[in-house]
Length: 48
Image 1: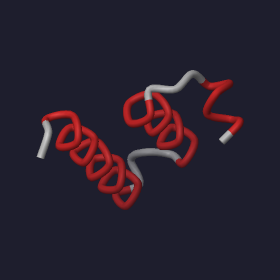
Image 2: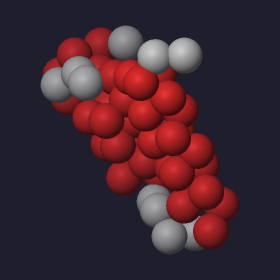
Image 3: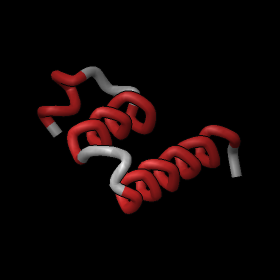
Image 4: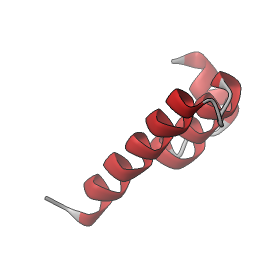
């Protein structure tokens, strides 16, 4: 598996864990998904 895919999976796991623990809001989770997983700007992400 490529390093990029492994990094994205690690980020997704981290986001899930933080959401379950209550230490990350849904809004901040969406921001991290947009920024860290997709690499899209907010405007581009909103169009999806």
